[in-house]
Image (cartoon, rainbow, N blue to C red; front, top):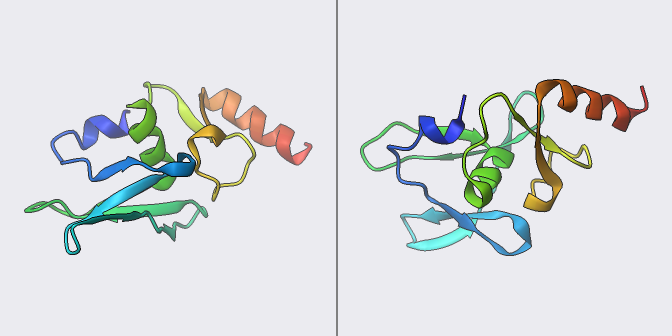
Length: 112
């Protein structure tokens, strides 16, 4: 499932920022601001935005960074944090893997 496909009808309020991260457009101030995020139950930073006239949208920050820099995540692939740090969502720390490769990489990081 492609996250970008789900939200194509929604204006994309993110842009590339220095350091490989993204900024969000703040309609109230009219400025681009860093993407602060809250953590979801699995410990991933989440970002949200509310398009004009639409429901609030939520995505994990690493998904937003990937889609902003690289486009949609190919079907059947997942985004992996190379260093294993869920908070490090810089584009240089992200790659796409199959679910099997992602599990293997996670096991190798913890030494199992």
